[in-house]
Amino acid sequence: MGAEKVTTQNLQVVQADPERELLLVRGSVPGPRGATVVIRNAVKKPAFVAPEANNA
Image (cartoon, rainbow, N blue to C red; front, side, top):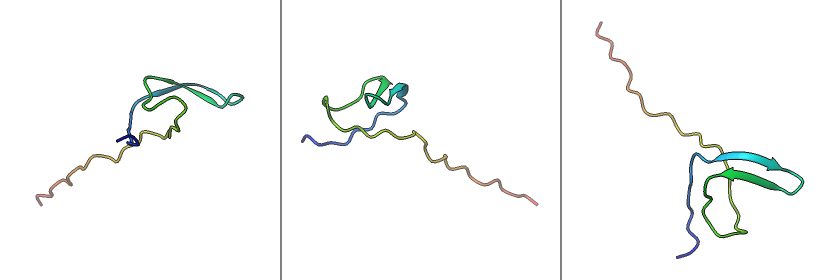
């Protein structure tokens, strides 16, 4: 219980404030206030595409 890793996808970074070291995110961010949050691109692996059969 407790330290579970949770992934939330498709959140939008609205604004960055480098002076106060803040990122404003649209949507709910899991975890308690003051917790460390890792932000990365939501790039997924492409879906498998079967090669076309050559009927020659």
